Length: 294
Picture 1 (tube, rainbow, N blue to C red):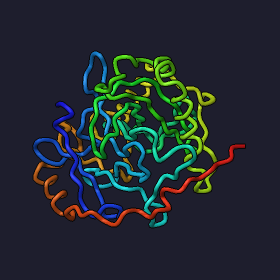
Picture 2: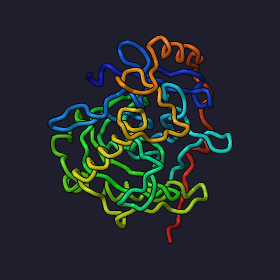
Picture 3: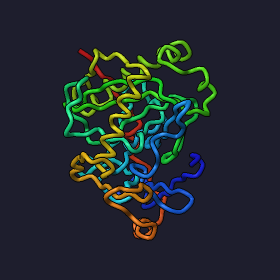
Picture 4: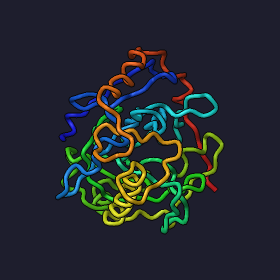
């Protein structure tokens, strides 16, 4: 299915805890976690990515893995909506940030590369193209490499990708190509990931492999492994994996153990509030923060 067949549906009041972004295809709402195929094209290999956070924005949006149809919502901590601070010189997120559908960093599995368990989420993507995407966009992307971040003792892979429609896409096929065409970008990406939690009083994030990026082949191996964990989680493999509190309801995945009908999916969407533009976020979101690395 072409990415143009997917669209975003906003519900609730923006900048509040009622705000949700559902994803639909031509026939109705679906789960961006489960129902969008991971692989967009087999050869040359491209994948689907769901955009959670457009570049230059601060709201920490993510696929709600625990709710029916897994809409995109704003993360909360202690009852307050979360925003990523502007850690000088960065403004919000420095890429279109999102996740691969049909992947799962299994919290029951200790990764042989990092020595840590998965973070219970889909695999994250940093899309480095020129266009500022929209929340809920589904992109066809090319994988360029991967970085192993360790977040609070959990493996949290960050994949470097580019939209196949980006003007630079044909020129970028490896990490070295990114270094050549976008000098400094990979270093800035690692720096952003290292410091982005520090304005909230947390320590800097750590990385496996001494912070070195791994190449396309390594990245695809990780992606395929997490796709297998997802298949085990939704019941497509003989060996199962405990989903815990995750919602595994699938609209389009044949053979999945938890099936949602089109009527049920439409009812889930219709029971949410119509979209209303709310008051903008507090101006403090735009403040600069300066971090000091040891």
